[in-house]
Image (cartoon, rainbow, N blue to C red):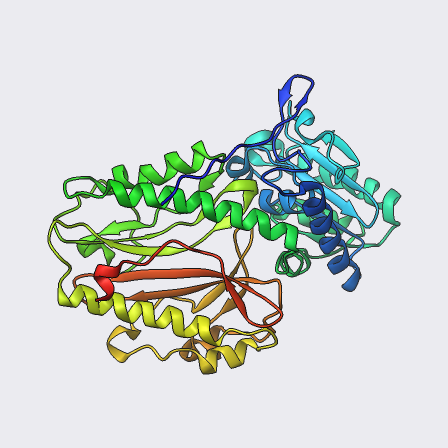
Length: 418
């Protein structure tokens, strides 16, 4: 696979290297990307009568503003940074000492210091801190949108949510408007998705080249991480690489287990890569030095068939229920270990919608419409219950006005398809 030349455009503000700031990085108008995304959130808020949202999920803050700061840390330390957004104001409350990171974005009207309302920060004074946090936030919201407004809230501790409600605000869940906003990508946004995929494919190519019996899973997995970080990607969200007997069942996290001869090695990228976009495809390799067995080839061919059949039925205007009804029927011997989804949305992470298998739809499924601008990951895991090995494959596609466009271009294994 050819090496691409990836350069992160940076501009300096007060002598600091700033991220995702340039209006044109790798041919991408990032100002247009950010303003489109913020407009999407505001449109979905208006559709539901939500006057303001308080976002604390760092992925959603990044979606709505383009700002990034200690994304993994912030996920487990809410609310250490948060965003208050109305139809005409966007106020970012940044982590202590980090106000400079949110300055200069056209999507942020004001940056203030956050006041962390968590037990770690407040100790036994947590309830008092939560009430003070809520009172200050309610006063600001009342000034911006009036009293008694409907406020969308996410990922704040229970005490904060209760205290906000006590301030006379009507609290609703912010998940729906944000997820629905994120579901439809602009053409400029798709350039970010593709940049992340191409960088991830370089990393997977390096990982594939590094495969040899005697290497541990974690040593092999680290090859992808190194490549992603070197190309200005962010992080890998999971640890899904396993070899041999550890490929069945799926979801066995990477360990220091040694890769043996002539084993299958399966991985799911789950990369939060360039510009914060998710590159999500799965591949299964063979460790050598011999040829794959007939059983290994059979597993691979079945998984390959499932992915390509389900890609073939995807079309704009199709309902989620129709997709479940038309999707590939998993053979009985593989059904117990099936992947929990048939397909899912993909953007800055895995996202709305979830498309379920026909058999799971009555209990888990919900209806909706597949729309142009959605990016969808089509999944397959094939492994018999109690079987020796399994195969994980997945492709990422864009739904267009007329069908789909394949986004993930990493090749499949010809020796496993024979």
